Length: 249
Length: 236
Ligand SMILES: Nc1ncnc2c1ncn2[C@@H]1O[C@H](COP(=O)(O)OP(=O)(O)O)[C@@H](O)[C@H]1O
Ligand SMILES: [Mg+2]
Image (cartoon, rainbow over all chains, first blue to last red):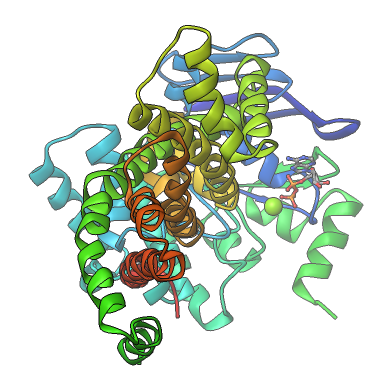
């Protein structure tokens, strides 16, 4: 198993946002998380890389690295946790004062202190992979939303994480730009990346996901392969949600 | 435009040849005062003050009370008391209890403390104005607090804080005239000395005003250029 998430719980004040979440992720698995707004999807994703610290629970990685929440954590442990995954944000969060290329090289060059030539080669090849080789010197404000999000993906890939996390990567995009971003994610799936993706794009989820997790009110209501969760949901809440997303009115 | 306006003022107060001569003769000592004291005092105080401001801003943004409390008291005390009083405390006050500091360093201390307090509020506000997502993005590429602050947050905060900090700088140029009261031989002190000798108060004080104005006008042009440069990455 690549990552096992055990008994993750998180509250904001009185609000129980995550209730005892268990997930098993195998190497190369694509997990997509769906569910209504406010159900805790973003919080769950953020707990996986330490942007949010759960109140309880445990993360166990394939290499034996383990984080037990609910006790004081060492800075080093948190650094290593965030080092494991690359994060793609709904609102891109690109560095506006840096060019596309600089956004991508910032992590490997200044944090990981890797060789400059090597990093430049890596960054150019990643930008090429996301279809932005010719845009490397442009600043975020000169790029379309879809291009910015692809730089966001490239920036996350550049730290060479073991796991990629996506939080509704296409939700802020104009419909005609969604396809380019999904295409890049499909390519990553084909390359064998392990990914956890929060999305409302059910067709995309059906196509790439090994497991779909439906969340509601901080709990996993149902999980399984797309054929089951999307086509033959066992839970009433799941089918209602899928109905609503498929036929919005 | 400006040159014409200045010429008019000069004519008005130098209607007679004697006045014009005094105007010219006093120009040199005043410019010397500016070059030897006003400008160094401004530059040194501003540089030290900005370092102090940055430190204070970071202390105030920390989660630890041990850091925020002294920063709060410092800012409140400086903002709540007149600059002239601060200047007198450093020079005459400390001097009277045996801690004599020369006029120029006294002025540097008082003005630095002043810039530090006002500047820290500007820097703190500009750091707070940077969206939380920038900190988080920095964290996800492995940065710690210091790296994120230095490479991601401060460059963006600088853009936001440059207009108000330029105003602080320009105010400082003018405030240095207060140092004349603790015997720093800066521009305005020179004007006072010559005026006391010649009784030409109007002429000399207007002349001093014009000199301050020229310096501040030049600075505002520099300010515009810096802002334009920094606009590079901002959508227009
Ligand atoms: N930092 C926070 N402080 C307080 N409440 C939060 C915070 N982040 C999220 N929440 C709340 O937690 C719940 C789940 O949020 P979120 O994980 O963003 O859900 P989703 O991504 O599924 O829409 C929401 O009710 C939200 O208001
Ligand atoms: Mg969300």
